[in-house]
Image 1 (cartoon, rainbow, N blue to C red):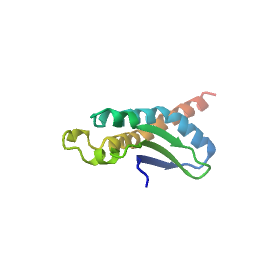
Image 2: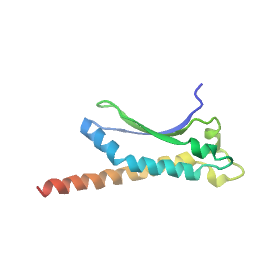
Image 3: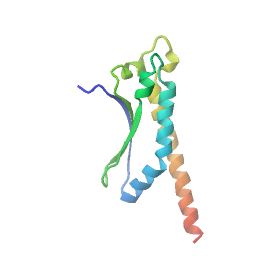
Image 4: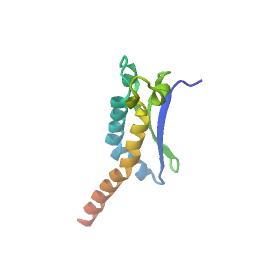
Length: 122
């Protein structure tokens, strides 16, 4: 049985160029989301915060890109949904996922706008 707790955000793109650029553009977004999860995670022994990591699975053409923020601790999932002592610390992973989903299109739009401006200046 797998004891990891993870949040996946998936998007599908169609060309290798899209995948490479998207991974480059979203590096800081994913790092920010990981820090949001760490900041909002419960702090009993700091183990949960230290255990949160990020990774990206780069697909081949026409497959999903997966950004993953996860923890391998057994109690990470329980703390996501249950925290009687500090209820404001619940949903720490959901907050990170929401941050990515709310900002991904802004990142894409800003970077695509830059490319369009650069091409128009030629």
